[in-house]
Image (cartoon, rainbow, N blue to C red; front, side, top):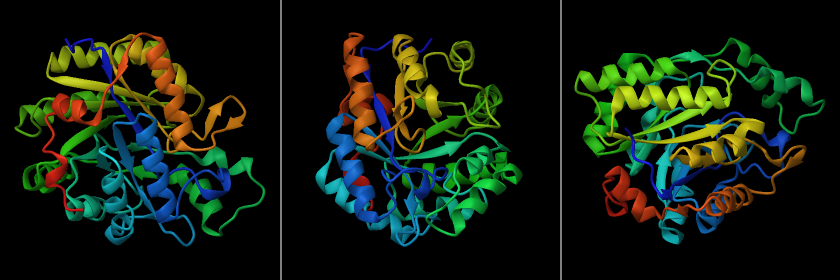
Length: 312
């Protein structure tokens, strides 16, 4: 069984690829804003920074390594946080394009989705009458036709390209229970070495619902499949963010917050920044009697290669 720990690692997902600039003025998309919000989140208590890039001109999703390199060196210079670069940054491009930023930057961690799935956020299109940029509405409204491709071949390619060549460890994003079995199969065929880091992603349309019973089920399944060879965290999309984080802490897990996952700090109130969400979840962690893990404690927990071995 995964050990119940007193140190809780907070991940902050700073901008993501779902929400658009119209939805919140706090959502960072310019390079300098992504950098500053990431730095502020680390100072508030985030040990891991989960990062996507945006086109700084219009806020659209970018997989251009140059856009990442505009903010990664600043973040490294001003924080000791573990940098985790997404390999899921676009629902409409190839795995080759999605791994380019990590292949260039060689971070300590990258995210890796553990299965293909419907991935939709099209209901958000009806909430807004006017949009800041022309691309936004169609991008959101057409997501009911998106399939987020992560085949076994894709997963193996990521492991070879990043895991073996760059010694990157993965945030294994599991959107449903089948993704846990996919990971178990991959490990049985020689991919991925423990300790592994599971991120239970709950509340995305197309994945498992953000229900307390489902979190218990995912955790029990992971215990059965991986024994004591894993660490785990949870993100609850939207309104489920803080309730599921609280439940995860009490179950011995770690937590993820950030404007990628929810734009709100409480019901009906937009968050002013990523740091505001990190500060709130840190208070919850500490008031429950736990300590917040430092970046170096996370490096030890997950057997990361170290910040001195990145390329930025």
